[in-house]
Amino acid sequence: MLRRPRFIFSAIMTVCRGTSSLSTPNPSKLVGKGTLVGTGTMGGFGRGSALRTLYPAIEPYHTGRLDVGSGHSVYYEECGNRDGKPVVFIHGGPGGGCSESNRCFFDPERYRIILIDQRGAGRSTPTADLTDNTTWDLVEDLETLRETLGIDKWMCFGGSWGSTLALVYAIKHPERVTELVMRGIFLLKQEELDFFYQRGTSMIFPDAHRAYSEHIPEAERGSMIRAYYKRLTSDNKETREAAAKLWTTWEMSTSYLEPNFARINQGDDPKFAAAFARIETHFFVNLAWLPTPNYILENVDTIRHIPTFFTHGRYDVVCPFKSAFDLSQAFPEADFVVCGKSGHSAGEEEHTSELVQACDQFAGKQ
Image (cartoon, rainbow, N blue to C red):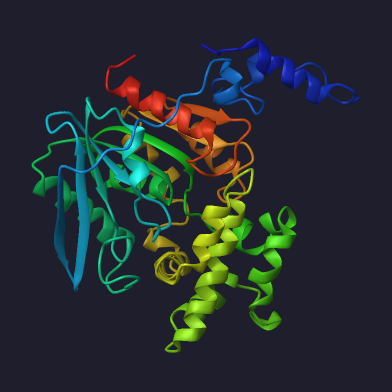
């Protein structure tokens, strides 16, 4: 049944007012669960209740490393309740690594919280290494970790690239996933990459885009990803570091609705920027080695039985809103929440609140 919150249809009528060709929308023609675009549930501030925040900081009770071959040593950690509901946090980028705050989306009394730094990222070594570093290697690393920890099934939590990897992992191993919780849907399609790295976000952030684009000679700007990849894989250290700083600063400058200077300054951290920029471009020039250009949506039927929740910021210019909308249309069983005053980052308060609530619900807390 179509859910029709009053504030949503009031907003639609406001959009339509004053147009000669449009009248009040017919609810029967709206698809899905009813937002401004006819899908999802308006969340965050739209709920009219106090926003949830992260759980208090915690420390791991166990850390370890996986020798996954090709010289890669993959870091992982466990927090919370040893006997709790297993959840694996799948970080973004690719190349972003995990942070201490990533542990805090989950009630530590109810969850066995597992974080993993993907190949070349975070505390995994060697840093920024591209050898045998593909989507399918990362999928197998998740399976290796699951088996190492003696877990039969687990919940997968990921945002941005983390949503990509969570979806691909679930498609490959649906019998191992209890639930999916995601934010900032990224389907790894060419149209998404073109929007952010070529022309789209550049129209909204022309100031931030200038340094990113002018670093590349005009003759090479037809493929910014490929041009940056060429420099990030150069034998010259100064060439690599300059490209890594500008690539990383571009993404961090556009990830929040309101500027987050701590994140923007990550471009000045050579180690972080090297892993982030090198691994991202490595994956993106290869379209993540997915078998077809629309792989996730073509295979979503494989996972439609899995309880799934995802959020997307209305003003996300890193992963365009269309990606979440398209997923919601192909996966109508999923709960889709629109964060109407947010951009891309899980650190924005609407996203944080919705994700914490979803994890509480999947743990049987609400």
